[in-house]
Length: 624
Image (cartoon, rainbow, N blue to C red; front, side, top):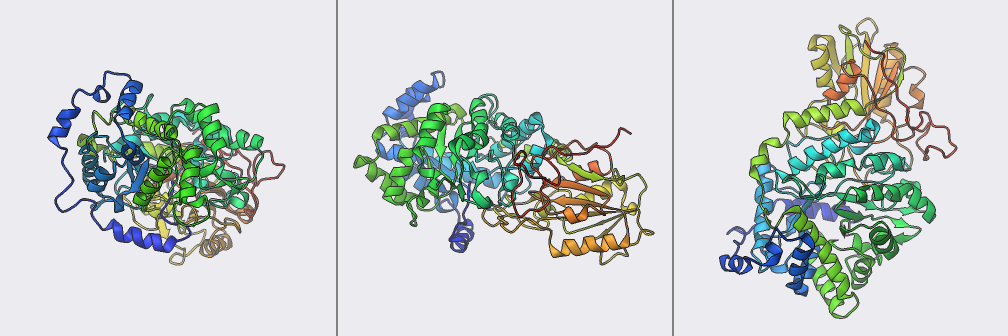
């Protein structure tokens, strides 16, 4: 995904904010399954778990009318849908957009929300359970108190598929604890221009790196979808080429030959398919001027045919609406997208009109009934494989797994492995007993170090989630009496006599897609630059730690800084940064992207340019 804010950003954001305060259930609560209906279903083949999946799906499909089928192809946003609507319209799925959460935003609050909607689905004659989807892109990041792992660009720096698989497994457990069974992750974009606002969602610029990190699919789904109770459905997104748009423009145009598209952007999808990924999300972007949501060649011929993808294809947030250039999902939009191979359509708010339109175009013959049956068969197959017919409700015994010490320890390890030391003239590791000045805009801000897609879509600065900041990690490692903190160095006298070394933690503030594009380059803020100038003038040995979702313009710093470290967006466990700075963990991360001398144009390995630090760069320390 995804997200509520598009060209009409303000209007939708206001609507989401208003609706988020509303309850999805009626005052009387969700509808209870009809005992007589349940009795009538008892013994039907599609409910017999001993039968092969294909036989169960075929039996169920044969019992469905057009309304059942169209409903299964429809996904609505939780803030505007009720259990009664799920039942009446036979909805196949409900989602939470970024920041769309129940009240209270707790494990129990989520479980109550999802179970209420699930009861609506189970009350229907066929009792087909819903899929509930969220953007759990670096942990269950919509949930307050969940473990927030490093964003993908940091995980790409680890080059550790086993670690990434373990993160996928931990994420799946925390997601399952809330009743959610589907995540819109992993993002398999191959980022080719760091000015793009989604760069941090990419594992790197090299398709081989991205392909290796599809191990997260195995972590999320387990060896086979539904083989464990905490298995959740993964989504390979955004198909295809979203990381290669001209100028790094979000939802832009990827202008490449087919050979280039295949070599760079398609390869990770094959790796994910080989791991059994259950769903694929289509990109908002275009390929050579044609919107991906309507591209039958890439969706049906290549993805489903050539690559053999047998899961289901879901649209992005109202992405079908964009095909004809007019607002809303028109008849033309729906016909083109569904015939192109989109199986489930994310229509967050206008789900009723979409259902009416799709029903009409099928009845008129513009969309073949065989295409509808194919789409529904794929969706039902995922539901059967997940075991939703046998266990549709939340396993509330998992609540204690959310934010557990084990998961936070895993996240801390991931942070340490993700750090890339780019320059070091001896300032690192910080020696025991050193007097350290810690400063900078990102030194003591867990919101900044977590980045976008943390509690809300765009993320936010400040103490928004429980965790450990980089400052707190250094205080714990070195001792409070050895660490002086000055947020912008204005409150501390910066002299070499007062401190042995300064750690300046600078970089970006949170953003996500659309709002994160930086067409003019990715640069440090004036406040960060002023701070670094003061440190330089004082002659204090300085370690610069860059907290960001992509490379930033740091060329001017190299002639005076004693060490430069890329910390990416580490998430809630800032102590992992301290582990590397103090030498408790030797740095092992290497750049997953080329670091340009100037960020006003893209630089990639093999393109003939001369980066400041090349793909794979990274230093370590000698053994102590």
